[in-house]
Image (cartoon, rainbow, N blue to C red; front, top):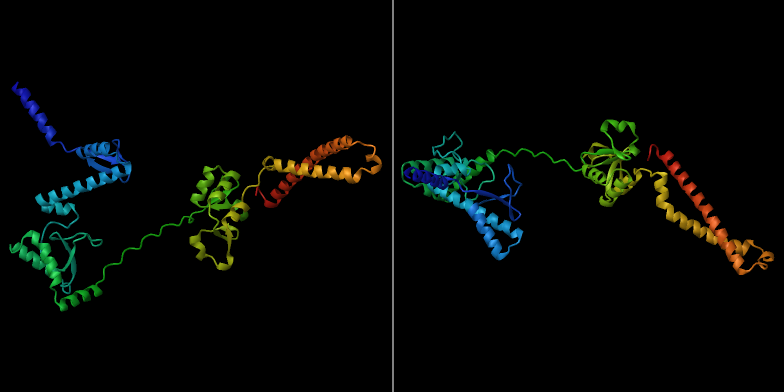
Length: 381
């Protein structure tokens, strides 16, 4: 029995020493365990998560408010943790929260560096050289060494160091202020490295011919007026709506009708306009540019698109012609022997036959127009 009791004690001690369980929280719900979580994930202690969900049941908070509440809880817990660390382990906590080594030593002052400013906070020279946190005080190296000497001698306590540093900045003599400003003029901070320019959306153009995306090496096989150059976003629209006429039509419905720069019929990125002489650049509207390179539809597609219009046109022509035939062509010497019913039947028969004949002729002419357009436009455009 004694052995059993010792085992239970060991188990209970293990439970007590286990770290608190952390729960990933986002969009008002607990996330499943994973190797990585999406940006914006909030990490809560298990007790805080349970309290939050109980409060949600009682007040029926919306999901957006749940995330806000979870963030505030997480921030509060982090501040509490920082306070505890600073209180119990000041040297270690200063390293953890972005400060230089906890060693407080006098700094060697080179000739001319007496008035060099250093960032000071929480009793240390801070590590970062830009974007200093609130509460950072800028003191000279001489003032810093004075503080360290006083602290090592026991004249001041650790918590008083920041107060004394702030006092130094307020009691400087005019000559000292002038010397500090002179040092800063002679030793300006290094200029930040130039950031890489982000490529514009149209810096990379992709060639498209008719209903396919071609490789850059294949561009030489086509005329400039046959190739449609699209940005990545424009190509995605065409791709999602299927290549060919449907894709280009979908692109026409989405894109803005801004002006595009063309050189010798080829679209160039806007970022490279300065590389070409102004006399060579031609500006066209986006819709006109796409329409000029849209693939010519097949005969079947053209006829199916215009079928209703062709029939309506053929009927209008036939009806009007039949009326004029009865009125102007049938002579009075014949019409006086025909009843109105006979004339109406003849007019309808004539209009029906003529309508069919006109339809065939219109279909033929439409197909001929398509052939001529294809021959004039080259290979499919």
